Length: 315
Image 1 (cartoon, rainbow, N blue to C red):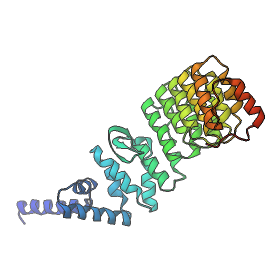
Image 2 (cartoon, rainbow, N blue to C red):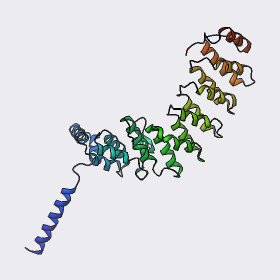
Image 3 (cartoon, rainbow, N blue to C red):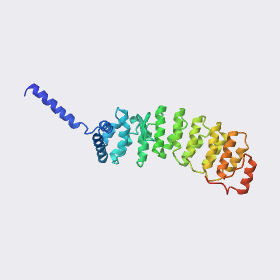
Image 4 (cartoon, helix red, strand yellow):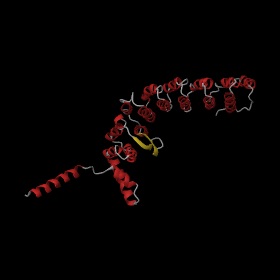
């Protein structure tokens, strides 16, 4: 054999090895073909993806989730989340690791592309929760999560809220007092997604927070809490918050409870000097009672004494 022939043979053998080891499918190519103007090409790509999902060929989409092309990452994560095989679930969970964090042009809650980038872990956490949860996910997410830069801490808080595992509440209980307001807000929002006594205690601890933005998030969190224990917290905000709009918003929220217990508090607000509180209390009393008394507190007090709350309307 000549030297030239030997070189050619070596190169051919090396090429065969490379081709043998190369992945059979590429997420970037498949996702690009889904946008093709050729119907058959789109259909072929969709069918291939369905087969990969059914077979649990998760590595294709793990590579896509790590792609340098940001637009390919979200759909790759979504396809990976469709797989139920144990190795695929483990691969999805691994995307919660801090070292796998990336900023992606995707809204992780509305599940659609967005011009504003978000932390990829939020999308992963949301998909895990929608898929029935993963008991190992919260530990993976929180490993090394403390004492990170504010933007990373903020993403971690939102991911905990999306994952909806109450074992993340201790982390949030610390984060709500973070020196960076955006981290504190993100943590407060995340706490508000949990309907547990621990979550309500955290929200209550923030009633006197120095940041108006954080206190506003507290009100938003309380708005989805249906436990009667929330009433006293709302009354505290209504009676003490320095911002009139937040006081009024707290009063308005009292109308959604079936328990007539807030009525005496609302009547007391009619006696105060705060115009915004008086108007909010009057509107709330009318809504709760179905009565049309004016702003005079004595008329409301007489009605309350006569009825003892038995005729309070149910919102």
